[in-house]
Length: 518
Image 1 (spheres, rainbow, N blue to C red):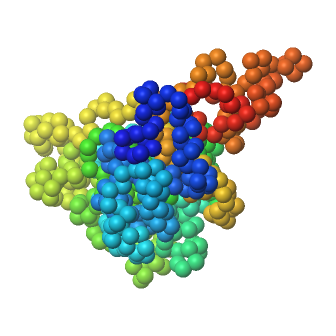
Image 2: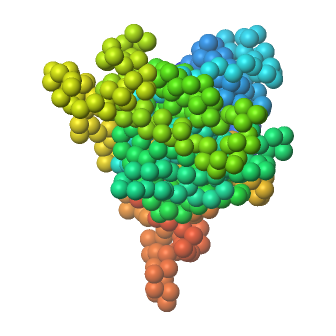
Image 3: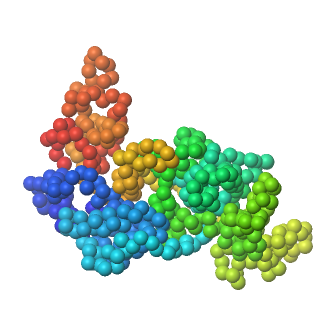
């Protein structure tokens, strides 16, 4: 509905909304158009289209779902394979395009006749494309959001900071043995955790020895870890065996028992960066960009290869015994990273610039030389040089990225069963992705659909999601506050009152809404 002219069904709906056709209702036309398909099929097709639309709008906020260009569809399928998305996801996307063409009359271009698109859907293996490291403003955005943000987005940003500063893989950080904890002294220190499942654990993926991970606090632009842990505690999140460190978000601010996968996290990050700097290139950013960020800084600072391998939790087989007995093999890594943060904040090192422009002082070409320069007395450097460094600080003082109401709503739904982390969880990949994508993609899609319910209370069941209408005399005298619905049910604590009834409600009680005009 973000481009009604791009489909036959959309043009029919548009004629009703604009008043040129008055003897039909939108709900009647939609019901008749989709009557040949079951509800489960419609959910699966809609979720695939919504996931593609969210990916498309993350790259260009002004893009519409339809028409679909063959090049965009092919690029989307290739990226799904690069992000190790489920094997069925590209195939279902192609099925959804066929559904949109035949059932909705949507403009899908040459997608259904494209040989490369059909081949990409069934090709099992593709060489992964290396993701680019984050830039300084993107690191600042995530830390600022973790410090000043609220809700699910702030918790997501804090987890992004953990993965980035601790140089972890996205999936490995999901398996913390216990909740990460702080070790601070006078406002500085470390955030530490231990992983029981990681890529280096072997074929069984169950670590014989817990992998210790740590990152420096404060980060590049502030202490993001303290508010992140507080937000996690207030949301009831607790990492541990069988519980993901970053679960998938649910509607209403709740959390699933399933981990947030890397493909959805990639889209979420791109949405945040595109919102802050519209038009900035984000197609090469993914979850693996987080681990590459700090490691790339260490390489640009001329840190030794052995130190960089240790920072990425890769060690020489001949050094395993020495590291095991040393008990704290990450100490030299953390010391070097603290130094890198310091020279960046002082303006000596600019990792986003080219090789020739990376060092602001010609006397500094490595981390050691930069630290020696900072250790000199201030009088040894010309005053104008010091003023230049202070004026070229990468982040201006008092810089704020987010407003108080700038939170992006992320939600999901669960329906079905999947065994993740050894638990039986009610979920469905299609429904969950549709619920995650719909509030973002369709924020302004259904504003033309309103019900004539100015004087009627609407209640929604918190589990099924079906909406009901209250009777005119909603209160039973002998029961006090009990509310009776038009279908005869009583609005118990499992019902919640819907304040905003202007949005289109897809799940409605037919007995309550019979005779209500749309």
